Image (cartoon, rainbow, N blue to C red; front, top):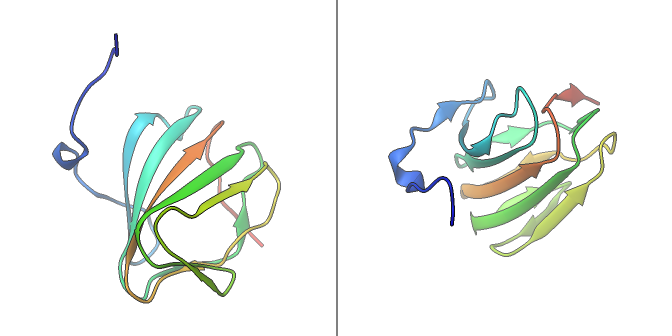
Amino acid sequence: MYTTQFHADDLSWQASGIEGVHYKVLDGNPVEGASVVVYRFDPGSAVQNHLHTEADEVAYVLDGEFIENGRRYGPGAVFAAPAGTAHGPHATDTGCTVMFMLSRTLDFVAV
């Protein structure tokens, strides 16, 4: 039996500190360890090239158009980056929602 059950719509979007990018934590705690986080990218928003020193990251595009390193992807696209792997920039012209699974504490190191 699942120990936690809720609807994601019941969670509020939180500001990420990057203009036009908001998130909801679905599971875990990105400050303390592994987590599953949904990010909403508003049209025209972007996240610069970066890496995570501790966390392996898997990203899954839920809706919209996600631009990774200049290439456009739609729903169903999956990306994986082991800790220490530079990735991005992430951007969108239309807006998109992407689920990120992180194996450890989230840090953000611009490259």
